[in-house]
Image (cartoon, rainbow, N blue to C red; front, side, top):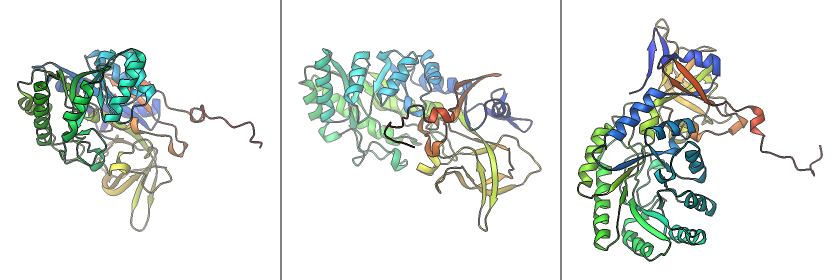
Amino acid sequence: MHHFHYVSHTLFCEEVPLSKIAEEVGTPCYVYSHATLVHHFRVFDGAFSSVEHHTCFAVKANSNIAILSLFGSMGAGMDIVSGGELYRARKAGIPAKKIVYSGVGKSIQEIDYALSEGILMFNIESFEELERINERARELGLRAPIALRVNPDVDPKTHPYISTGMKKNKFGIDMKFALEAYEVAKKLDYIEIVGVDCHIGSQLTDVAPFVEAIGKIRELVNELRRRNIDIRYVDIGGGLGITYDREEPPHPMEYAEAVLNAMRGLNCCFILEPGRVIVGNAGILLTKVLYTKKTPTKKFVIVDAAMNDLIRPSLYNAFHAIWPVHLDPSKEEEVVDVVGPICESGDFLARERPLQIQAYGDLLAVMSAGAYGFSMSSNYNSRPRAAEVLVRGRDYEIIRERESWKDLIQLERIPKWINL
């Protein structure tokens, strides 16, 4: 469900025509629906209302502080994977005790920052990281609350780049070493064991892999308790998918029912880390046609958005629906590649896609771009990053200004010994 819809052949976000945003803000830009964000969060969080839980939004999916603050106002915590994401979350007003820190490569600076802030817990990914965090906690005179991220070797049946819970993935501690790791952690003076963590992948459209992974986690928790290791939190990660094309992911209520049945009787607080399922379909990338081009074998629609703005199609061959902002019933469709200005053959937003005939100045909406869109964008080809806009009813606000060419070189310096 989302709040992008046509009114008299013009595409609106809630009650604002996208053509108005394009005219006043420019293109390319990201546009998010406040109503969709709120609805998706409430539906997901509400699905777990029968148990003690923390819904910790995955900041990597969309890290704009306005959106983080919006979720925080509804009680959300945050799942972070870097010091920068921790800084964003705190600036957005998220209490440190609602923040969990995942990721395989936490630096000393990042560990010290998180310890000093007093986060809820670190999700530990290796024996060496466990020892490093113990050392840093000792240096700071603190105890580090931790969960071990366990790799259950479950195939999530998703794109291999976003699979995280199999033996060949870099994430987590292999299940067969988990008990040993907890026994090591138990003996460390500056470590406080509080939980178990598991995350198997992203864009999952079937509950079965979740249930399989949770079954293994349940056995681990029970064994840890038999060894007098108190587990208060079970972090089951995120990964619930959305509809980009023809996918039929489970509704959050179906997902919650399966998860809670698998975890029944564990008597702990659940931590959930949704990202894409909350923000994915709440945002679009608005772009303008610059040129059309025909070759003997192809028709190209060249737009002002590119792989630096939305890399998912180039990186994952991901599908994003593309809707004309102005529908013209008299126009026929043609099969085209929608491409950007980047000097790479991999710079495309869609390939072999039926699309209403386009001309210079026409506007297109690249749908389902609210997750891993702007947050994965770059300045490749020295392109300023796009603006971000949040729409609420009839109003909208720019929540990130468009970068300028001056911004591109703001942090760069020419050495004095280079003489022109």
